[in-house]
Image 1: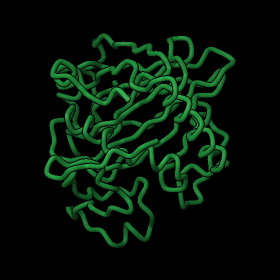
Image 2: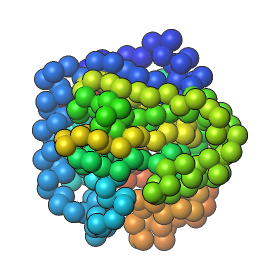
Image 3: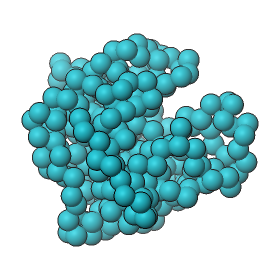
Image 4: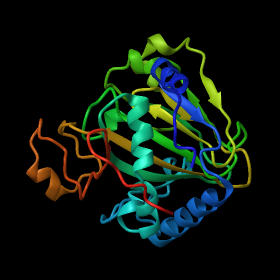
Length: 272
């Protein structure tokens, strides 16, 4: 695994809100990720979230991507991949924070002829607010403009608030919330399978339609800076968990959001 980020990559991320890491996985590692993601998604059936009866519906959103969340919680192979401290260190180095917890992982599989992913921000959906939240996005297939590559609005994380829109059929809704971004030149990111991106949780981004008869597979993970607090939104938390939290409470439950890296503690590199 190409798990070291350079000073240049850190600066690019800080300036633009995203960065590309080419050849993140070697050929053997890529096949391991594909195998584990495929098994974990198949085991879920139509259930989107581990431990919950959240069933994928047949609607526009389902044709944007098949979404399966927290695969690390019910598949041992995915647990080994997602809890690898090297990923946490990369995220912490790019975000320039002391420690990182997993908020949630998610497989995002855009189906053949799948709908575009509307422009949106990530962090406003989640149960914490942080300008240092960050997501990993690993390409399991070659990703091109034809099959739904990511697009980013460079630097948008610097002026974003926590206003957001849903991912719906009007892919430009985000620009009603942030009209000042409407003249920004978007950057398309075409990457080979095994490469990845990281992006800030407040960086505007979307993805194109899949104009091919093949799936476009990606495995992602959202990271929460250690020390983040509850903002009152449920997101992936269960009703039982919500009942125990008040706004401002520390989100430090290792069973829900494991701490996978902290600068003050040595971390163990988990083997595939």
